[in-house]
Amino acid sequence: MARYRLEAGPTPLHHQVYLDLSTALDEGEWQAGDRLPPERELARRYGCSLIPVRRALDELAREGRLERTRGRGTFVLHPRLEVDLGRSESFADLMHMHGMDPATALVESRTEPAGEVVGAALGLTLEAPTIYLERLRIANGEPLILEQVYLPGERFAGLLELDLERNSLYALLAERYGTQIVRSREVIEPVTLRSHEARLLNQPSSRPALLVEGVAFDSDDQPVELTRSYVRGDRARLSFERNILRP
Image (cartoon, rainbow, N blue to C red):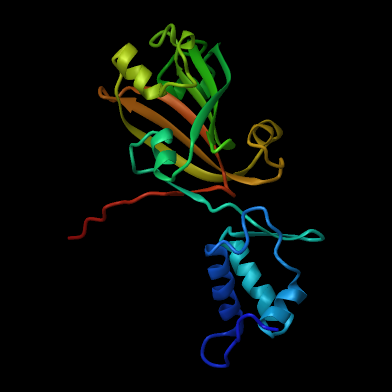
């Protein structure tokens, strides 16, 4: 017995199936992690052949709502969180806006000499001391972003002695060192996770992710921070807004 009667007309059958499946997902008929019924069962549900069902499922997979795995079936994914790069809220504030419980886990913290890339980004001489921080940003107990941060070591001496899990890094720089971050320059590119990043993000090593590399500047326009952030592609999407001036 078909749950939804497809109609002949200008709307293609696969799009009608797509719309109804989207509504079912929105209404919670299937939750994140659930496996959808097999394609043949869905075809009976809609009273159609397998082709419209497969095209609808493929479209939902492209949108990141489903994951189709050969031999295992089709599974519902968590909805992706939208992270607006143009906003200045902290990670905790952004997660609260999404109704999620944020947390930060400090994976590693150490001092190390600057290499060529870090030195050039921060305006430091080769081998100058830097502070390296690796932190996991977590939402509702699930790792979402892995941050790898480099800071000038002499400028922020003693930073490693502070609580870097329960405090905002930018707030500490402002309150303890009088350094206000006012702007950043960032580049985004798709990557596949290496074993280290994949393990921390609880992902397969071949899973795609977004890498956001950026340099942050203080009020004197001096570089303060070099950051590499690995963002899970299955749980988040990045957005930004720009103003376009026209003559």
